[in-house]
Image 1 (cartoon, rainbow, N blue to C red):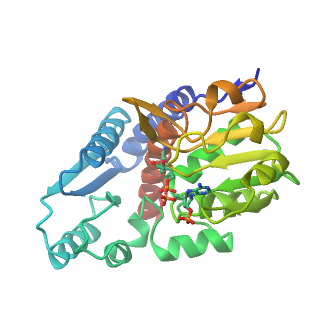
Image 2 (image 1 turned 30 degrees about the vertical axis):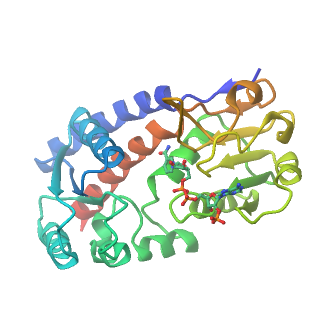
Length: 283
Ligand code: NAP
């Protein structure tokens, strides 16, 4: 049976280290990292994500502010809020919870965030730095996935990695980060033909689709590493994109849903907030 990489357990350890770091920073600078989260509208999933982020910040000893706006806010008003947070010396990280209502151009809003405070790593300059292999704030989910892989000393060099999904927030950055660590990367998407044969060649599969049972046990080779990013609700239960129960006997390592990549995403966000704080303080 494969080893389960518990994002929940790993997160506990890392969040403890973050808490420790925050108290050292408080000693040094007399203040703690402060994350400002902007939430527009009343989407229950977004509200729950934001609550989770706020709770995690508080537990790590950081400050967090949630700015709630109803979905009638104009693009200009939202840009003004970002401008104010950019200028506020007591705010070190800015996160705008996506998606935004249709009348607001997400790109404009992301572009407006001060890159030094871009804890999500979505600003185009941060994305460019990451692609160039330069020092960058990494997007939280891909960073969390890499942390999970590193936590088990899983060799990436020369391995075949298949990323299923090509979104800007998961698939593409994961592909880039795995390539940087010398994996040979294939990216699959909705138009990919014969996904099964591509999966069967892979030493590492990262599934980021949003469709249950996209990866079944007959698609996984013995000893493969399976990272399941998907979050799907089936009959009131959360499941990933992979058939966990069947695949766990075949994989060398597998991440569960829930309790896998999800908690690591928030953990990476905390690390990014500390990183932004440190960079700002050293300027
Ligand atoms: P997304 O933007 O909807 O992208 C989904 C990707 O899957 C697209 O590239 C799409 O291809 C591809 N796809 C769709 N059907 C496919 C199929 N049958 N075969 C192969 N590829 C297929 O989603 P996302 O934001 O990347 O998120 C993916 C999943 O991860 C979702 O379930 C989301 O909830 C979850 N997620 C979890 C976390 C976490 O912290 N746990 C964070 C982010 C996302 P096309 O490009 O051709 O459309």
